[in-house]
Image (cartoon, rainbow, N blue to C red):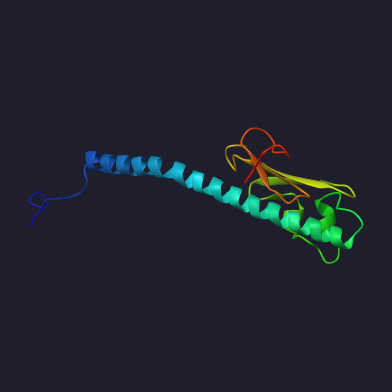
Length: 145
């Protein structure tokens, strides 16, 4: 057979453009959901970390005469009460700040990048009640979760 009688089949430019348009449309619908799921996971991890630090702080106080002044005291003690990642103050998109004195402590968890790594901020003190806020930093007057 000579070349002129053979039919060469392939995709036309229009067909390729339709496929690309469908892929872009599907991605546009899926990406916001994926990002929201990531933010929810970060917030759930932050709540778990707040619980861990609260427990560690209370346990530290049961053995020592005062609450720890900061997170580094929870990691540098022997045995350590929290792991080095959490003790560094940043974990899974949240920044944790612990301050304490002999009779009280407070811990705040704030998203590293607001509306990207998390929306809510969290707070806990020696009462053990975790509180959250959508507007600004959570404190003792914020709603409990």
